[in-house]
Image 1 (cartoon, rainbow, N blue to C red):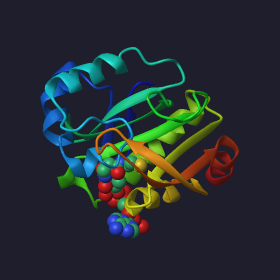
Image 2: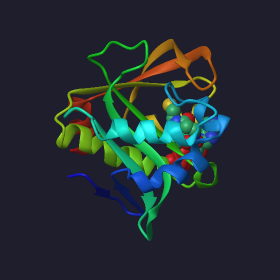
Image 3: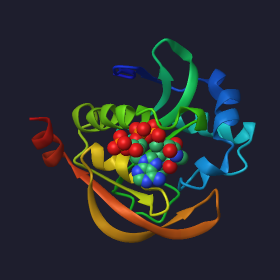
Image 4: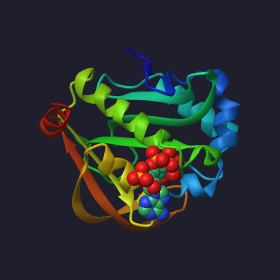
Length: 184
Ligand SMILES: CC(C)(COP(=O)(O)OP(=O)(O)OC[C@H]1O[C@@H](n2cnc3c(N)ncnc32)[C@H](O)[C@@H]1OP(=O)(O)O)[C@@H](O)C(=O)NCCC(=O)NCCS
C-alpha cells in the first residue's frame, strides 16, 4: 500500500515533479526550524536529494506527499516514518515526522495525516513502537501527537539542522499495544 486515502487527503508517494512545489512550501523557517533534518534555506538541490533518498527507503520506513483528495497533483506537505538517521537518536528507534505548507495550518490536516500514517506504520510495516519528539516551542505539534495517541515521556533536547540550534523538546512515544488498544 503506497498511498492512503483519508476523509480529505490523499497521501501518495513523492514524485520528481513535486520538487519545485516542495521548495516553494518548505523553504520557510517556521517549518524547517521545527524539524530535525530539514535544511534551511531549502534549495532545489535539497529537494532533489530528498526525493532521491525517499526512493531508497528501507522496509521499516515510508514517506508520503500530503495532498488534498480533489487536487492530488499539488503537494501541501510531507510526512513519513523510519529509522532516525542524521540525528542524535538511537538507530533502532523509528521516528515520525510531518509538516504542512503554512497556508494549510489550522485545518486539522496534520492530525488526519498523522493518524493514517501511524496506522500504516503499525499495520503495514509491522513497526512495534514509534519514538518521536516535538520542540517545546511547538505545542501545535504536541497536540497533533497527543490526538494520535502518543504519550509524553518527558523533556529532552532536539537539534534542528534548519535553525542550527539545540532546544528543549518533549519525547513522545506510541507503542503498537497502545495503538491497538485505542483502536479497539
Ligand atoms: C505542526 C503542524 C504540522 C500542525 O499542522 P495543523 O494541520 O495545523 O495541525 P492540526 O490542525 O491537525 O492540529 C493542531 C492542533 O494544535 C492546536 N494548536 C495550534 N497552535 C497551538 C498553540 N500555539 N498552542 C497549543 N495548541 C495549539 C490546534 O488547536 C489543534 O488542536 P485541536 O484540534 O485540539 O484544536 C504545522 O504547524 C507544521 O507544519 N509546522 C511546522 C513543521 C512541524 O512543526 N512539524 C512537526 C515537527 S515535531
